[in-house]
Image 1 (spheres, rainbow, N blue to C red):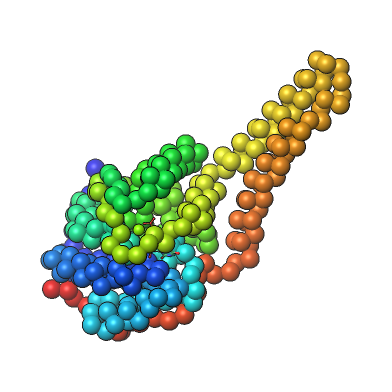
Image 2 (cartoon, rainbow, N blue to C red):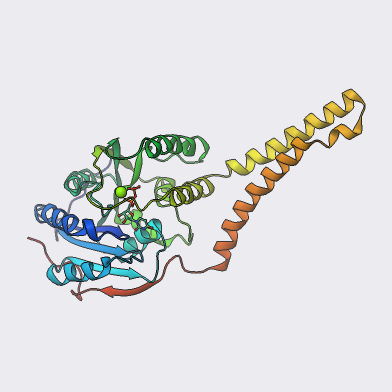
Length: 315
Ligand code: UDP
Ligand code: MG
């Protein structure tokens, strides 16, 4: 059982990271509900870090206006859209809290759960995930693919991740410090978090529909995320291709020997297997290439940070 966290000398600090991509429709409400929740958390000092992931709909101007009014708000803006995972990571790098919560900007993850996440953290858990019991307002396609994906990933991965959890979770400072040290530009946050092996627990919630706008996770982005999860979590696909290749070769050899015909060795099916194997190799090679290039995972173009010393006290 984990050890209770005690803060005798100062109140614990909590950072909330909110990745935003074209969220003008939601942000007023999101900020209002977050601010109300954090105000209610007596004994905590809180900051909100909004990361504008290259929006084009006035999200940045809205964030700046929120930050002008609310000293607990900080905002950073990417030079372009670098993706949700990069935005989360940038927020984690900015965060100064003893614990950090990552939450979506569209209120699909209710901010009102944050006190409960924090309570479990105070009990001593290092990672507190919020697991989706249900998903309202999402397409049957999204629900089915998400369900299958989390289970396939776990079957293939070397380290299991909590199923049906996105990035809505609380992480202790220790976990965040480890995360931000990783030099992987294609970092798959939830995979890395479970790989560390810190104590982890979860709470369940019903996922609400988006308050405004459309999902920013297009099919393409979903495929990119699952590809990242699969490639970073295991070498099972690579092993599978080797096994398939070996099986096809053995099969071809056996047939050729049994039928006494060497030409049978060359069969169209083998080309298929080879193509598959090369494709999978190529995926890994591409991933390695991206890392070797050593480009930054994102570029921050602007920041709004009214409070020079972060974390003004929230009463
Ligand atoms: N998001 C982002 N960059 C992107 C896509 C999404 O920062 O390229 C943010 C988005 O603003 C939201 C969160 O990531 O706060 C989750 O995105 P979304 O709600 O569109 O995904 P869904 O909930 O439909 O999976
Ligand atoms: Mg959403």
